[in-house]
Structure formats: C-alpha cells, structure tokens
Image (cartoon, rainbow, N blue to C red):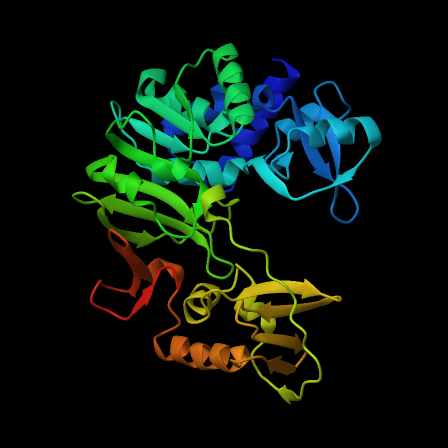
Length: 374
C-alpha cells in the first residue's frame, strides 16, 4: 500500500470514528477518490492574516492534502496570489475558495440521500474533489457541476479527467443553476447562500432534495429542502452545523466598526459566547432575533454591529451599546423568549419557500415565523 493510500485509509477511519460517515456507498467513494490529486497546491495560514503557498513535493504536502482539514486554494478571487506567495513569501488575503473539511462534505453527501439513477447538480465545483465523489457514487453521466470562476472550473475539469471522471462541467453563476436547464433529483451547494435561489427549485424535480448551507453572520448552518412545484419548497434546518464561503452573488458587505464614542456600561448576565459561538444552542435563535447583526473584532475586543450603525461591546459581566437600536437589549429579550419556548435547537426549525417569500418557522409551518432574509 502506498503512503497516499495509507493516509486516505486513515482519513476514512477518522470520518467513520467521528460519526459523520456511515453509508457504505460513501465510505467506498472516500476510500477510492484520492483527495491529494485535487490539491496539487494550496495555502496554509501563518501569522496574522498571511498565507504561505504549498505545492506538491513540499515537505508535509501529502499529509495535509490527505487530512481532514479545510485547505484554502484561492485568495481574493485572484489566481495570481498563489504565484506571488510562492515567489516572495507569505501574503495577506481573504480566502475565496477552498477544499472543504471532508467531515462536512461527508455530512452533506449523506444528507443528500441519493439513490442509484439520481441526477445531481453540484453548485461550486472548486477543486473537483466533491464532484469526483459524486461521480464515483452515481456515475459521471448523472453528475453536473458549475462554478463561476473559469480558472477554477478548468483546473477542476482537468483533474477530474485525469482521475477518470467526466461530469458535465460549466462556468456560470451558481445562483442560476446549470445552464443547460436539465431537471435534477438532487441539488448540492458547497457554498453558502443568504436565500435559496429560486432557479434551484425550478431545476429540481418535485419531491427532489436541495442541500445547502446558510450565509448568516449568526445562525448559519445546513438546511435540506424538499422541492415543490415551480419555485416552491419546504424543509428543515439540520442539526449539523456547517459554515461555507458564500456564493459570490450572496456575499455580504464586511462589517465596519462604528464610531462608538463614549458609552455607558451596565451589567448583564448573558455571556457573549452564548450569542455568537456556533456550538451554542442559542446562536441560531439569536440570528433570527438579530438579522443582519455581525460579530466584529475591533481593537482587541469582540463587538456586535449592524449596518444601521447600532453596536454593542461586551466584557465580562458588562455591556455598552449605542446607535439607533440597543442590540444587547434585543439579545437579552430573545434569550428570555428562547428559554420560554423550551430552548429549541436548530433541528426544531423549518423553512418554507414560495418564490421570493422565504420564512423560517418553529416546529411547524403555522408556528412562530421569521423572514429568512431578515
């Protein structure tokens, strides 16, 4: 057994041991598809926001490429950043494409509930690794994949072909689905979205499934939608957490620290981590109560901000806030409401889509509702 095969076997063992990979078909796919062939180069974080360029043949390259880690493959939508980092050393930049953690890939693939003969559309080709897993499971003729970046799409197509896979590949805005207008049994988006694009529903057969992640500064995560007729559907928020880079058309403006000025501090019994950390059971509900509110680290402190200029600063047992709304007051009231509702986790929430109207609900479609877009 080669070193790459041993590392791939270890990866599969870790996914099974981590309780994210169960289906024998997907176990076989992860065992068969070599992740490292789709990652001949990538970035690794160094100090601050700087990234160093790694390529095939470097010390540790194979171990990283066969690991369970997310690996950044592009910065600032610019393919030239990798060559610059390779030539001049670590560079600053914002990740804009990556090979996702295999654990979240396994979770999403299993939540897709594919069966033999299903036709699948993948939104976000990226490296091509996920498309290869789909091709291994279903056959290349039943898989279509689209990416907005022509450089990424062409590289992925070459790697897929070299690995023996030939899905239908296209360059285009994933929010519009696949250009050919084929109807699919399943749609899988490996980017996050602020709202579910209606084109996906229109290209999914009634009763088919759409699995994607939400692009929300608070309360992100996985959802699975059952497509209805036309641009309609209904589904559930899944208990598994998942955070992906947003579809380019769904990127939000980065939060900006407001001019806080002088502020009066008061005591609070609600810890900041309960509101903002994904592992907190309350975080999803906090996102419903605070739409558009984003965490922002500023001058060594974590703030909550909103585009309307509202803000809050938190320190142990105390909070200061300003702007047109008192965000922390809203958070405290939301926590009391969440407690009165039995502290519902994300799995108790669902989503109904009727064209542009997209709403979350608690427990049932006629229960408490919140607009998806805030």
